[in-house]
Image (tube, rainbow over all chains, first blue to last red; front, side):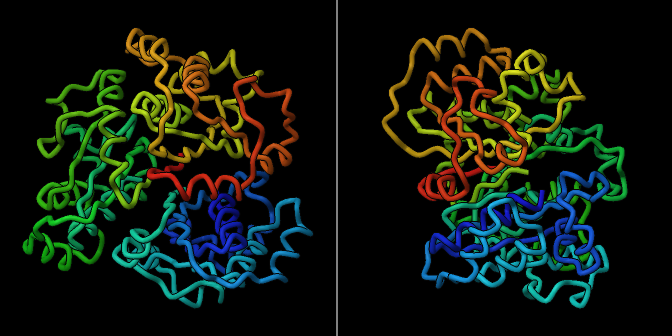
Length: 140
Length: 140
Length: 140
């Protein structure tokens, strides 16, 4: 379930759209350093992985510069990149990867538990503020 | 799975947005009187709870008056309120809590089975009419 | 999980909206010929069916002609039509039923495995292009 928002966001930036993903509840696992080894296995082949619940915020038409090195990497890997590769591609392309602050508090997750590509955590109000200006909002 | 739409809707009203939630299929359980005792246990700690499928309709920029007593209650309970508390907060703040009419018919649920905070049931056409004017639409 | 997008899309066209559904990952099963016998059993009664993950793209206000024969059929079947019936109703009413190209490649699904009502497969960029003009975007 981590693929759809990451694929859509990484595609959106190649189309000069802005994109952000709000990782809530178990979705935060996608940003956890300790999960990276497991995430290198595609989720479909790993039924034991807890289901992440990331929310893609949307794609605001914008002026994000297109990273050509990133695009080349996408084209080369036409057979689905791994989740860590998608996190890297999204981060390099300017996709905001926001962990949900109350979810982190509830589950006792600290900033240092997360990969460096993660933004500072935000709450529901900041999410709604960003999403209300987006032209596409989806939840997975 | 009941938390994300209720948290987002209760936050939206504190930001002077309007919000409505369309409860479909098992999502209607969130509005059932008989489920309230169980829902006081947070879903994460209660794996036996059937997965609700509520759809948040969105947040229409509007003029909803901000209930200050509700906000105080939110601030006091910075550690996640229970689902019944969120239903109460949403209802007091003007969030529309719509059960899905065909889902109720299919599952034999009657109006009197639902908490008083629930609105009259609506169908897909009324949902689409409301959602098409919303700036954020999500499905959980 | 196939019902919500198909019910919403089939309702949208009766309201003179345009609608499209992007079937990703297991959601493509809804369009597979070999699944049709099983899909005639409602998903709620068939726990063995893999969970489909279709994404409704949205409802673009438009000029789609309203098929009156289709509407009569909907009214007659006020007790939920089957998934194959909904696929037929959606197709006749002009709902675009797009299989996701990378999902098909990943799972080794060919065009001839799909029902004739399915459109040619598209990718994430075409989805985002369509969705960014929609007034409602949902993911199931």
